[in-house]
Length: 195
Image 1 (tube, rainbow, N blue to C red):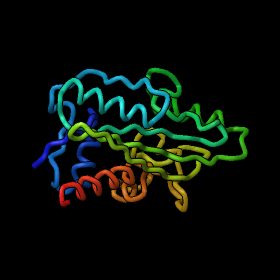
Image 2: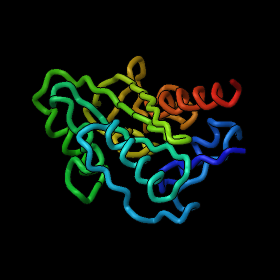
Image 3: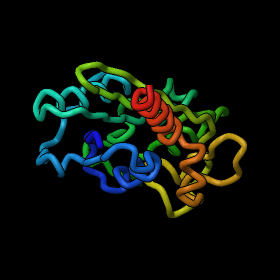
């Protein structure tokens, strides 16, 4: 079975992707290859950051790898926080501070339209591929829900009356930006494996 490194230190993300891949590939995390350093994310786009992380792992560890980057884009804030989503309110990367800043900035805005975008970058046998997942929705007026992470408590996906943080993880994975991007990656890997 072919091993692919998922360039994340988040065990929950590794577990989620393993479940989606259904044992067709062996997914291992950065800890499994002894990578404990902070991988740089200095690109101006979400796609650029995903590729930067994957290239870093391939260059330094010589393994097939995929990485992802995600951003929240809010129309009335000129698509902010975007690539700065994790550190929107400062380098402390605190989700509560980030959400509070978004809610504050939207106080006098009419439009609350927003979208989550994930780009997965795969480097396999020296070739690069990217897969994008987007979910449209809007920013709620207040936080609700205890599950999920990041901006989940203030994001209401379209056609839903509850936030990502109020959903069961299986329900969220069906419609989420990350789920959509990862399913495209899985389909590509499956087709490659069976061609």
